[in-house]
Structures are given as C-alpha cells and as structure tokens.
Image (cartoon, rainbow, N blue to C red; front, side, top):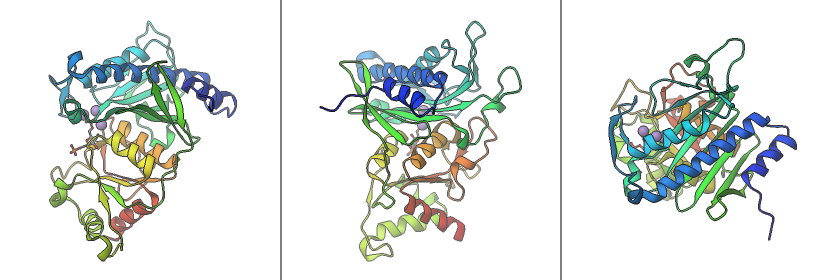
Length: 335
Ligand code: AHG
Ligand code: MN
Ligand code: MN
Ligand code: MN
C-alpha cells in the first residue's frame, strides 16, 4: 500500500524540499486545516448539534446569517488569532478587518475567508465549504489597515477550500500546483489523495444558475444558448449542466473532471458586477483553477490581475476549462 502522506508532511516537504513556504506559513495552513476539521464536525452533526437554521442577524452583504455562518467564523477566528502567524483577518461575515489582539504575538500574514460557502444548502444537507486566501502583510508600516488587504489575487501566497460533502476534502495551492487531502476521521488527519490536479482544457459541462437567464448580458446568453443547441448547434456537441449553488462544490467538480462555472453580472443589480466576492471567493478559486491549468476571468480580464478597491468587493466570475473560459471572454470582447 503506498505510503500515506499527511497534510503536515506535505507542507514540511513544500517548505524543506521546495523551499516554497516559510515555517510561519506552513504553521498557519495547519491551523486553518484544524479549524476546517472542527467546522466539519459541526456540519456533520446538523440538527443533532443545533447548528441548522438562521441566526436572526444580517451580514455586511445584506444576507441573513445562518447559525453555521457564525459558528464557522468564530472557529476560524479563535483558531487563528493566538498562533503568531497573522497580523489580521477578514471574513465575509465581518464588516471590517479583525486585528490580532495585542496580547497575542503579531505575524506577517493576512488571512481572508468565506467561513461557510453555500449557506443556502446547509439546511438541505447539500455540500458546503470554507474558502480561504493568504496574503503577506505589506512591510514598511506598523499595524494593519483595510488597505493592506487590497492586493490583487496574484499576490496570494496560499489559497484553498475545504468541502464538507460525502468526504471532507481540503484542496490547497501554495503556488506549486493543486493538492487534495481527504479527512481520515479515525485518525483525525488530512491525507494526501491527489496532487498535480489538472483541469481538462475542453469540457461538455457548464454550471450557471439558469433561472437568471433573462437577466444576463448578451455574451453570456450567446454562450449558453450555443451550449443548449447541442450537437445540431454551432458547438457540434451536447452539453450537460450542473448548478449546486455552493461554489466550493461546483469548483471541486471542475477541478476533478473539468467544466465551466459562471456567475456573471446580471441586470437584477446592475450596479454590482456580480454576486460573488473578489477577496475570499473569486481570488482563491481563481488561483486554484489557474494552478490546475484552467482559466479565470471576470468575462474580460484575468481575475488575479484585478486591483481590489473594497474589502467586500463583488466580481463577475467565469472559471474552469481554459478553452471554454477563453470562448466566453472572446464573446465579451467581441460584444
Ligand atoms: P455564500 O453562501 O458564502 O454567501 O456563497 C454562496 C454563493 C456561492 O457559493 C454560490 O455559487 C452562489 O452563491 C449561489 O448563488 P445562487 O443561490 O444565486 O444560485
Ligand atoms: Mn453568504
Ligand atoms: Mn460563498
Ligand atoms: Mn459564506
């Protein structure tokens, strides 16, 4: 039986063998993984753990918060604030940045997260997850401000997600490809189950919320109509469709077997570029997808090049199999 490699050993090797990640970053990632394990335990309890349903509050996004949104957020804050790796954190569920309290050692990294992605799926027992992104704190000034977080996604030093589904799987990149780790519940450790993940350049599977079709811009409508036209249409092939409404689950499928995921601008909220958040959804997922050979744009530009202007900035997202993303981007640029 081939030797089982734990997340810790994988990270030590990325640190030692490839010199890719400093010890502080390795330790930070191990803390995030432990927090995800703890969130997975709560998710798995469901009704038995009293974690279902809404918390009766709203977040900065104007969304009604679920109990698990808040529980997952607290788990990540409490796990990460004392270790000395971080200077500050930012979360979908918190209006402003969270400074590591002075009583704890200050680190050089900034951690952003969507603590519970796919909240609308919590109560119906469909896969959900946690998305995280790590940046280095800019040098040259004491303390941390929101501006320190406003770095293009290309500056990330680590990104990943943990999907709480039939398996609990942590998916991670530190810039040397994408690796997947499955949680061994008996041992309580994440075990390497795939590395050098590759997304096929072509696909026959698209993911978009079709109920928004009447609100889409012309290039997205053109692309989806051509997919729906099937083998008799201009694409000369039949397409399949999936929409799980948990980005982590849709992206995990794409990393596993290819596909294209779109959450584009639509005219329901014309002043917003899209629903998904740049800093803790689009950027980490875009880096993972690119590290696996795929592409990620906002319809026109590479997501990782976008200069953020606000912490909770939204963005249109088109990501997945490179040749399909390129087609959608071409349709936008031709429009
Ligand atoms: P979150 O639960 O963190 O707010 O994110 C939900 C996002 C994303 O996970 C998913 O792809 C999308 O919302 C689904 O949106 P619709 O419900 O509009 O399809
Ligand atoms: Mn939300
Ligand atoms: Mn989300
Ligand atoms: Mn969320």
